[in-house]
Image 1 (cartoon, rainbow, N blue to C red):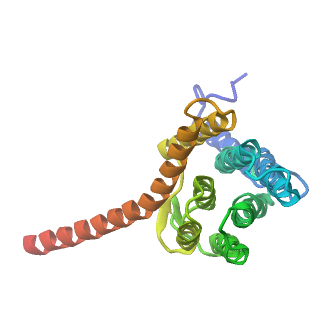
Image 2: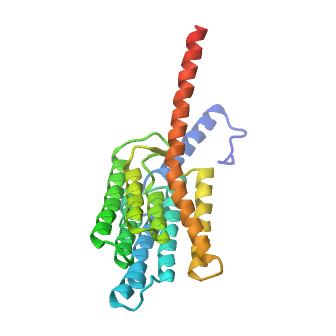
Length: 291
């Protein structure tokens, strides 16, 4: 009997038939499942949504409620660190669900579930962080912080809607990715800068999310670097929450690095685009001179 997994010893007709069967099998395995079935990638997406909800719950019970009841005058760093860690885990789920969906069979619900989960973890959660910061921070303005929080939420809603409606080149995002924007907003809140400059920085992040600046998708080495950055950030938060020596410095360094990365990313993207255009112009001039 001929081994079905090898083409050695097969005639042309048998080889063609075997290739056709393989192609049909691969197409069946990779075809989206019906909406009644969830794929492995969908469970990662649902994990992202769960992390977003638990982050909101942690901030409410550990920071907002104690402040409103007068039980504490300082934010609970354990609850804050837990909430941010949950969102970082949600970012990991968001990073892997697309990779898993491309490798394994996806479902017809995949894209819709991903948008809804991103809205919870990277839209509602960071906006809620900003609103709570405006409540617990001294010398703050609750109405102004609520307005900026609403700006963050609307920016994520618009970005997700545009992602579904506008077709981009493969490997490209238009506007700052929601996970990056959400973690930058939370990094600003963790640093607890002066209130008005902090809100202006958050508004700038919201603008970058709805901008037309093209960002590369985290694939290959970039995905690995993103995962390493998430793991390092979780470690810094754990040290900060545990009150370890140097924990405060680690948290501040991580937050500043996140903000710096978010600020430099569009500049690097614009620089690359300008370099490509300059290269095209030089190539055309060289071609015209050659003619």
